Every structure is written in structure tokens, then in C-alpha cells.
Length: 168
Ligand code: RP5
Image 1 (tube, rainbow, N blue to C red):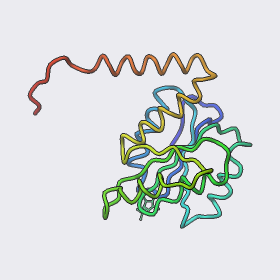
Image 2 (spheres, protein in one colour; image 1 turned 30 degrees about the horizontal axis):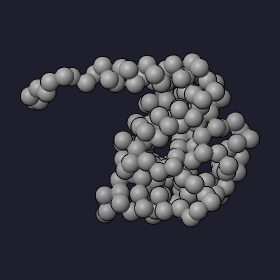
Image 3 (cartoon, rainbow, N blue to C red; image 1 turned 90 degrees about the horizontal axis):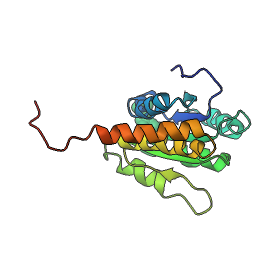
Image 4 (cartoon, protein in one colour; image 1 turned 60 degrees about the horizontal axis):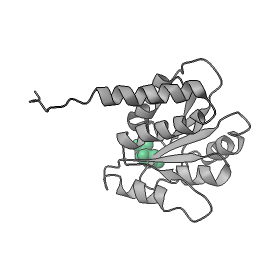
């Protein structure tokens, strides 16, 4: 996916499979809205372990500041990435068919002390919130982005109707 604006990526969105993109694209959309440069990569802990080692060990030197990692099932990607980079890693449990993402959630959340992964909710909400957290980290040193995040939240608030209506 191409990113806007066209500058060096600050956030790396990685996922274990093409099938995770349906979830992770929601996080990418948030970063795009906020104008945060990011990259997207399929990096599987199991099917492309060498790609994972290369990605995680070079991430900081390539200028990335935060990694958002989504995976499902035996979801080792966020934890293994966190083991190989000092960057903050936010993990998104992708909803699995067999166990509805409980397997993904527990795989990502139950890290041993010393190697943190900030674990989000299962599925779309988790992908969105991982992106918002990544943006919030970057906004600590970026006034434009802090303002963009404030505006994003204000717009969200404005969209909430006072009264419910019948839906089609
Ligand atoms: C995990 O296995 C991926 O993160 C994905 O969520 C899950 C299923 O992958 P596919 O069989 O759809 O490629 O590694």
C-alpha cells in the first residue's frame, strides 16, 4: 500500500499473513488520516522467520519509531518482533476462525516480564487503537500530529448522535 505523505516511514505495520490485512488496514487508514508516514509488510514468524529477524533487527536503524504487529492463532509475530527491537511494539490479535481470536489474544498478551508487547483488542478495534497509540507516541514530540489527534477525537465526538434512531 502506498503511504501519504511521501516521507520516510515512522510506523511499521507488519502482519503474519495477507489474510490479516482485512483487519490491519483499519489501522493503516487511521495513520493515513492523521498524516503519519508508515509502511506495511507481511512478515510471518513461522513462514518467513528470516524476514522477521531482518525486519525487527533493522527497524530502528531504518528510522522506524513504533511497530504495530497483527497476527492470528499462534500469534508469535508481535512477541518475536519485540524480542529483537527496542522500539515499542503494539500487538493486534487478529480474529481466528477456530477460536474467535482468543488464541491470538492470549498468545500476544502473555509475554514474559522483560519483553513488553502492548496488546490491543481483538480485531478491527485493536487495529484502530494500535494505530492511535502509535500516533500518540509520535505526537509526544510532534505538535502537528498532537493537533491532528485532538481534531480526530473531536470529530469522533461530533459524530455521536444524542438520540438513537431506527437503522435500516
Ligand atoms: C497467522 O496465521 C497469521 O497471522 C494469520 O492470522 C493466521 C492464518 O494465516 P493464513 O493461513 O490465512 O495465511 O500466522
